[in-house]
Image (cartoon, rainbow, N blue to C red):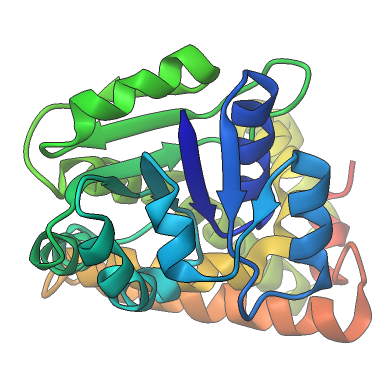
Length: 278
């Protein structure tokens, strides 16, 4: 099995490493990617091929694993290579709204390739055995199940293109949406000078939620920039529903955290640590 993964971010490289460890030949493109991507690809055993037609031409499957804002642009970029290859499966594995993945599917269909809509739930695969769930829908979902032989947890959800992305959006609206609410709670406590009291109350009356937020908060800072687009995609999916505004606010929250992280590398970012430090 020959698989192209774009790009070699944390998730893409983690998936690549798992597939490589199980015997697949894994390739990637480092076009417009930095030294961090190059190093992750090297560690994962991914072969870099920076000519799109050569990369797609050598592949049985192409997995798009990118920040949400790049999903459509990648499909457009690879469309000529997909058209030249013809018989290939393109799987969009990004945290995008069904409306966005439908656009990607249309680009891929015009290029003559097959398509699967994939929503990844969980963190990157780890060498010790952990793997996220790859929920798949659309005509290519059944074909994607071949990756189970290479260590991935593929779960067809049925339905057309957009079903897997809808599941991903619904799940992320709870997990990452709740994390943003936790940030708002901490900010309100800081503004009111009651952070210690809130911390004590959460520990007493909401111990499970408190423990979850304590685990979650330290992981947010270095990847908050990726969650901005995901929250915007959830808002897009909700459309005219008033709750969409919540996720526009969550996007701005994560954008603010990302900028503070870039500026300070402060792992507690002040008011968040006052409430949620372990």
